[in-house]
Amino acid sequence: MFLRLSLRRRILLLIASLAIINVAGSAITLWYAYKAQDLNYSMVDQDLTSLIAAQNLETSLVMQKGFLTYFFMTDSYEWIEKLKKHHENFQIWLIQAREINQPAQGFKVLNEIESRYIRFVFDRDKVIELYKSGEKNEGASKHWNVRNQFFKIIELTGQFKKIQEENINSSSRSLRNVSWKIKYMAGAAIPCVIFLSILLTFFLLYHVLDPIHKLALEADLEKIPRGLENEIEALKNRVQHLIMDIGQTHAKLEESQEHLVQSERLAMVGKLAAGVAHSVRNPLTSVKMRLFTLERSLTLTLEQKEDLDVISEEIRHIDTILRNFLEYARPPKLNCQLHSPSDVVDLTIQLLKHRIESYRVDVIVERKEKLPKVMLDSDQLKEVLVNLIINSCEAMGENGQITIMEDKIQNDPYHHTAVIRVKDNGPGISPELKEKIFQPFFSSKEEGSGLGLSIAKRIMKEHGGELRVEFDEVPGATFTIVLPIKEYDNGDNPDR
Image (tube, rainbow, N blue to C red; front, side, top):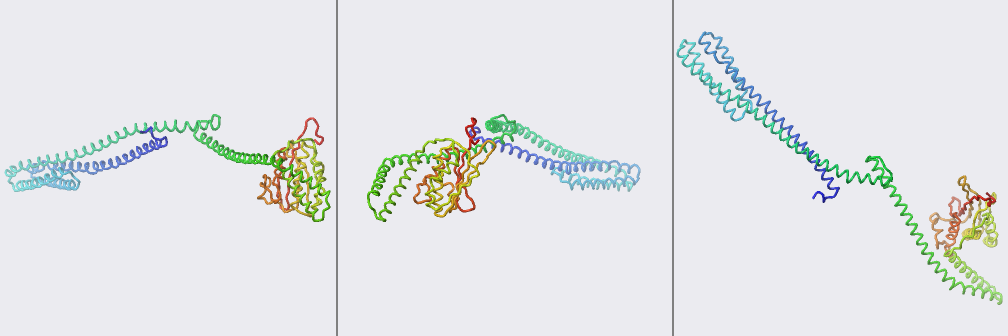
């Protein structure tokens, strides 16, 4: 039955048993103390006092012996006075003996002593009167009768003293019996306590402490000193690490789920882009060619020419969306060569010159010196810059200003980065959209595909750099391009 219980209940049962034994032992000890105190009070305050009273009672009676005979022989009243003195002592001790709590047999003997002593005193006084009146023969005759009464009273006082002695012996036996019972119970409790303690130690050692020590050793993967505090501390540290690992694993799992969703989207976009490319782009190319032919062969009015321009622009927009789809779903491999990012910035501004002018936007380049050459795909970086500049132009409208700031930053003695910041003075981006603007298919523009910034961020990530948005107190938005500057051992980096 005990072995079927759980470890928790077995340990609690053993602790409860030890507690019950200790409480019972304490209670028995208290009971024994009170019992011994009662017996001691009964023996010392009552039985011993009764014995002393009985002894004095007998002594005061014995001391009366012979005084009557001495009076008979000498006719001296001195013996009568001494006899009265011992008589008074006897009465005093008789009264004290009555005041003490006596058993029934003691009171019975004490009553008989008192009644016989009264008759004895009465008859003795008659003998004294006869001796005083000179009737010595008659007094001597009654004197023998008084003597027999005296010895009978002495016998009764002996019985009374024996009763007190038996009471003392009885109290002593009771005290010894209680002591032996306590000893027997203590003797029986000690093996039980020892057995339960050994059993509890066994369970704590083999089912609690040893497993804790083994877990602590496995937790720290090294031998730790024996000691419960060290082992629990090691387990606590391990549990904290596990909790941190669980949190990191959960974060990685969420990130993996996001990547999985992203991959599924990419797969769907890839299939969609391939279908769109075959089903839409070829007919769209034919439409563009026909419109170009019609525009050259027909004489159109001003309104018709505006309609034709709108149609051409919308077809171009559709073609751009299709190209973004294809580029996002099937990104081209990087063709990295040594180029200065500053050259790519200048080329991009030159290519977008007319479009920038159409928005009436000023572009300012702040550059202390050209950035060093790094390994990059100039076409891909140019696409990133085009995307950022066009987005700024569309966000600002007319009469805006774009500032492109170039800088070389030293992160540590061995690592440098090329930084390009594209800043505009438009309405800016709210902090809530900081992470969303780089998500695929998210766009704040009605005609946007939502792929431009996500493609740009991916291009910079493939270069080993990053693209991030920064928020300042001043109006506008700032996008930062960071490119790592690698050192070359063979000296093929001229700007090393």
